[in-house]
Image (cartoon, rainbow, N blue to C red):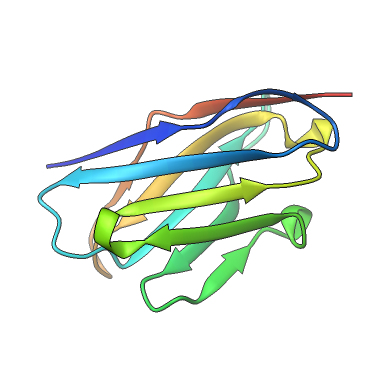
Length: 117
């Protein structure tokens, strides 16, 4: 079994920064894909950023140039540095990992990010 523990959410003002962390533990040899999704009230969950083990990344259009994803493979941890935050970034942010292609994803419990104007 795999567990994900997220941290780093909170309340900030527009223009400020936050850093999210998500550490995976359990029966893990390596992790193919690690990333973040978010869901705002009344909206569908959307991709924020993901990073493959080899270093390739993908970002949602709304966060490109402001957010940076990184990971520490030895610690099974993924980070999301969020700069220049906007009120529309307010959402619950979920950590997502996939151990290997074709297997099920694992999700964290979510961490709230609130950006005030």
